[in-house]
Image 1: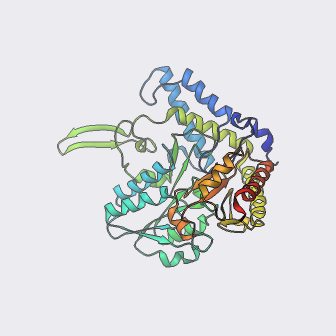
Image 2 (image 1 turned 90 degrees about the vertical axis):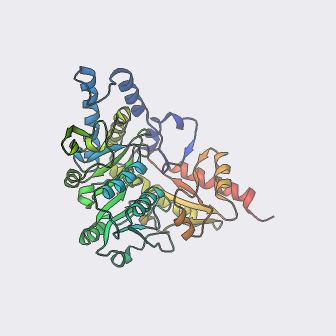
Image 3 (image 1 turned 30 degrees about the vertical axis):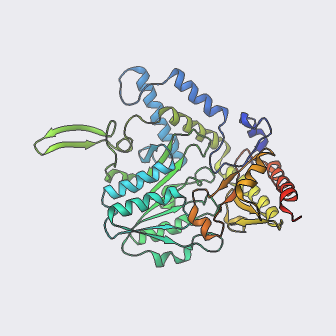
Length: 411
């Protein structure tokens, strides 16, 4: 059954004033149920986890552990595979540091990324490669900003240790052929790390079935709170790896032995979660997943695809609009970036804001991709979600016509 975006809107108080919110790729709004769950837990059930034998601590620990289970089921894994971090960026940083610390990335080894990557899935690998003496190779993009997946075999070599790709581009909305890349990475005996910050919130995923080894996503991009992200690590791999960070909660026992300090690490995921974790935020993320689960991720995906198809078609009809990315809606998911000819992206964003429409402008943490597409000053990005309806698309299109009529036409 198709989702009812107009009914869903009622769960988001910030939309009650007529705001057209099209900045969902940056961060989504929060439904009442998520905020209420966090407030109730914080006021009535909070204690630090895994630290006390008193009732309140044990109940808080159970809520925190249950959140791991809820997240795991959502992405097709088990709770031992779910490591809570602060966000996708920290998750990818931890993935890179973990593989470096465990000798997966060494001098002379190669890390393969693409020119379309968000900085969160680019800079950590560049920094780790510098520390290790490894090499970062970039798969180029085509004229629409889509990675040249047809060149993958040429870029994979016996030295490739890691392939790190984005699931869905935060600029073009293009979808990566994850299963195909996973198969080829496995054939090259390389690990596949997936930046699914724009994937998990918008489409059904099963990381195990997809052949992924590690994956990252954020709570705040899927109706959850800020301050919590996920690093998913395939269970057998997680058991083999030592954490890059140590401290409280990561160890079972520390002893002073004849050879120095002896450390026995905790099991996964606890060995990867150093210090006091995001407890209240985990409760909020679990509630956000329950909310999305009640809608059904297949319905979320279809709803976005429908709106994307309409928006892309209508924008393509306007001769004053330049669209970034694939022209075919079948190759996109929920994101359309564009520019008004002759107008800086920020000016367009400010003009839209005056009409009650929130979009993102700039380089979207993907500078190399924008340069490759010939839009070095950035772009205007409209990104859709479950509370966006066809009237939001119509209001955006109408506003663009008005802005062009007033500012864009030659005098």
